[in-house]
Image (tube, rainbow, N blue to C red):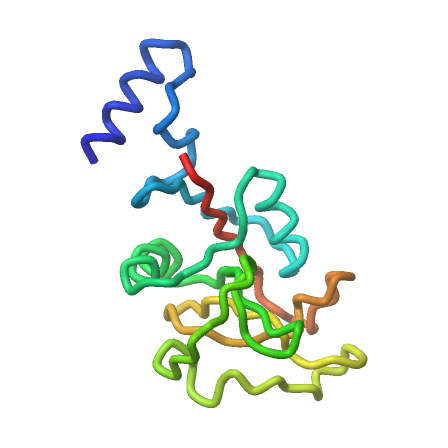
Length: 161
């Protein structure tokens, strides 16, 4: 984008520093936010804490444009987003209620599966499947337990510019 080129030129001319309004290196601009698509293998809680440490939060996808932007950057792999039902109903990490849209979920999901062999608890955290649809997983467990053979879950962290 023009803004991205402006920021790159400014970064080059000022030895890496930029004014407010430019995303840090490695972050992608979208609307008034910057998104980091991290490739670290983390549990949902670890991903949430990682994003908070980056002055951001796990992605909250409230509009079709949000969904399109994030799924365009995450297709082909798995990414955590800021959607959980740990408090009993699906909500975003900013406590905005999630309006259930079955088309956003994989068939049969969310299913709160409990036969995963990881102790008590069901699947309380959502991730984007490699095809861009949602699935609920147990891997949001604070101790980071993952089912045997579980795939790497990357992280998407938006923050305001």
